[in-house]
Image (cartoon, rainbow, N blue to C red; front, side, top):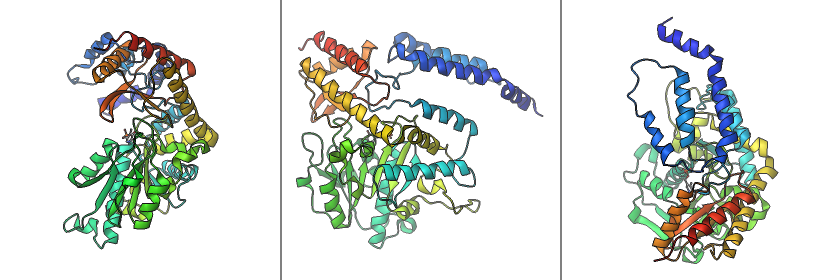
Length: 464
Ligand SMILES: *Cc1c(COP(=O)(O)O)cnc(C)c1O
């Protein structure tokens, strides 16, 4: 045995190491919520302790853990608690954290069935549950990726190759050399990650056919250009600012009739399809060809959980397949066929655990809870003279000050408060404050804290 092995073996036998990690995690879950949502200057300055040279030799893992616990934890942004309303950062279900701990210990590689039958099994089960829960076509398959950005990339590469194949061009063999031109049609309110994916895939921004949005950020169905079999249409379930949903029934029908491909960016909003309460929003969404959605936003799984769902299994796997003499495919699920990556952790376990422990009514209930609290938030803000700018159809609320400068000053004051945290954006040409309700922990009392903090910040911030 080498001396390094002896050192690592003694670490493996040191039960106190994992005990300490467990105690610290429990303390964090119990106590971090009482502290500021966002770390103050002192805690941020403390991060300097990590600026050390790479150690010359192995170090005591207890010293490493103590550093994380003493200096890392206080500097975390507590977005899994009840008072964080920034971005659309979801909370953390305790059950999925527990599942993740166990699965991390297993250290499974989810690439192939032969590498991890349990990872393959739970991914398959999670896929089946998801497709049925969201009411998507039963032949749909799902790939588990890091987030919606990658999921959208997967949906669009499947779209590109599938449409080109139907036009007689094989992208796998020929690349884009000599390929017929495709058309990309999307709303002016499309999320930035879609543009990034299109750019990676060789679709220039200058060629995108932009469709005007209505006052809520929905693609205007009456402004849709005439479609054909060369079109990829990108729609969204949940505008990142307003939470608005595109009119899927109308738009998908037009696309289907033309032989176009529809991709739906449903990062946080697609889960609305789990509750009949949101039927008017999600109606027709099943008529699309591919969908991207996150587990780590409104479903509240831990991070690193994005999903591409595609009704054309072959289009997805043809676009993402890879060969190698050592790759041993099976008759079972080989998850690497559905994603760009090969080796990766078993993300399906988090997703399975979240869906198993919430069940159908729990998932629907969580979305309804976010919506109910967002509506309550809008009502309370209105009472303070801060009227929301959007129709609160899901979990997003946007507000603003008298002008952009005023809005930005209010936002800075809120962010410095430490009581709550929210972010800003540009909405229809002016600065806004975005409030997103997406943690299971958020209660009505947390919304009251948010409203009183916002009201105080408005009051103490004079307009110029
Ligand atoms: C968050 C978000 C994305 C990006 O998802 P990631 O998981 O961060 O990659 C894309 N679209 C919308 C509408 C989003 O809210």
